[in-house]
Length: 261
Ligand SMILES: Nc1ncnc2c1ncn2[C@@H]1O[C@H](COP(=O)(O)OP(=O)(O)OP(=O)(O)O)[C@@H](O)[C@H]1O
Image (cartoon, rainbow, N blue to C red; front, side, top):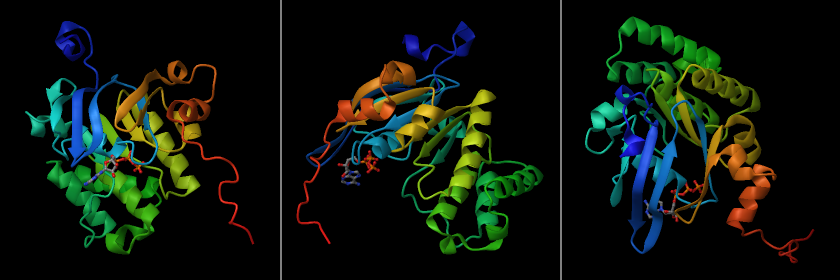
């Protein structure tokens, strides 16, 4: 398959290739046999309305949710045939997955690094670095169960970064995060991409995706409506206008006449 060429052939394999990936829940088709290709070294945005299938797609692409059909490769490694090898290259911030929240933030990040087989000294150093840049130093000794939503998001991000993966898959990383922390996270991710890493991020904030991402895919009702570089997808419009045109569904102004003081 041309898109799975390995690096030995002189052509870098894409970071992630998705082919014919599908998932149903009863009668509901959450993801409809989609194809996606995430170039290595790209900052890839996945956007779509609520319920479009973003989380389901990212969960299947990272080996967290078994697809009904289709395949996913991470740097040429089949996620569902060689999960350990594929997962060793991934750092994942999943949506709605429970953390070990009876650990402190510091313990949780340390545990994630040790689970990845990292040297304890390196884990300790990186844990402190991550707590510092994510403004969680003071909260490092507090139980994760007592964290706010934004703090929980940030500590989960730290667990995804600790082993310096080749590919970062982040479901809504900025949700509930304060603007200063969000700016810090954006620069961490931009540096990471600058050093050759690949980031896939789902977001509802079109302006952010337009400014931050090199590539974008718009999905709705489990289908990919458009995918490519941000400039290819948006054309002469803003990404937000393009998104609304592709997806539709703007409610008529004044639809709630009864809503008044
Ligand atoms: N465990 C589940 N059981 C039944 N239906 C589900 C389940 N998980 C997701 N769905 C359905 O699959 C569809 C896609 O959901 P998904 O969470 O992937 O969307 P999303 O694009 O991430 O949405 P949002 O932007 O609101 O987070 C939705 O219709 C949702 O109701």
